[in-house]
Amino acid sequence: LLDRGFTDVWTLDFRMSNRHGYNLHRNRFNMDDIALFDFPPAFDAVRRHSGPNRRIHVICHCLGSVSFMMSLFGKLTTGISSVISNSVSLTLRIPTWSKFKGVMGPFMFEYVLGLEYVNPYWRREPGFSMGKLLSWGVSAVHRECNVPECHMLSFMWGTGFPALYRHENLDDVTHRRGGDLYGGVAVHYYRHVMKMVFSDGAVKYARGDPKYKSLPDNYMAYAKDIDTPVLFMTGEQNHVFTDSNIVCHERLQKIVPGRHELHVFPNYGHQDVFMGKNCHVDIFPRLLQFLEKHRGRNPS
Image 1 (cartoon, rainbow, N blue to C red):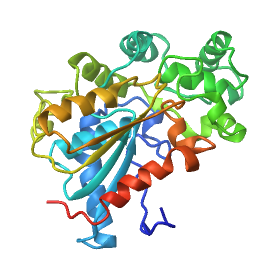
Image 2: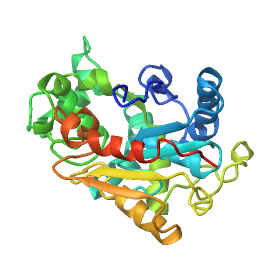
Image 3: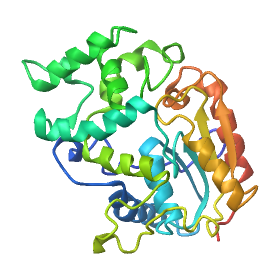
Image 4: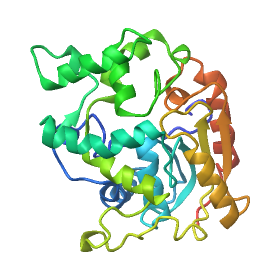
């Protein structure tokens, strides 16, 4: 980005970030909280520091992509020149085994196992814990590598051996640092994800709660009004959110033909499109092409 003249680059640690402690205790945050309370003030801060008329381009991923697209399509975050959305956005589709885990997991963790969050790093912690015991059990099933963090990440996110990426796409040190790079997550977010999966689209979690009255019940409701161009991207072998972005692009094509783009990267999965050892060759040139195309676009 810097080499191509995008010299003011920001990253956002919203409440799901593993840099904060919010995920390491029981809470009732949902994706609406992020869309409503995290993204709008974050972009206000960017504009205060960078200037009110600077063009802003967004690259978002996974549930960060879902929550940002909810904020954008819910008309809460405005003035965005372009968006690159990876893996999933406003249409959430997951494998059958992931549905089972998503439905049963939050209850089992909070009320049966007494665990307030899921942590890929449990096997490395000293002493005995219920989390470490669970991690041993997960590793007994996942024999595709000898990295327990990788096994837990497949348990937490997706269906596969492994689920998040293709092993051959990762550098060894990246693969072994999964526990540090991803971190723990509170389980209540899964409840909102599952509601959206079974609703066949991004919807409000607590429809009757006045706290969220400014949000649409269905985040596709204003799709025709949102003129920000989006590049929907995904790996061809996405075992976390399967064809979610493909379907979302198809639906938006029917509403606003030609406004958005889709790119499916062969031989990549969910996460390795950003963390793979050859991303600079296989992935990033396509992203830069899209950013360059909309570099001078002034949002309405």
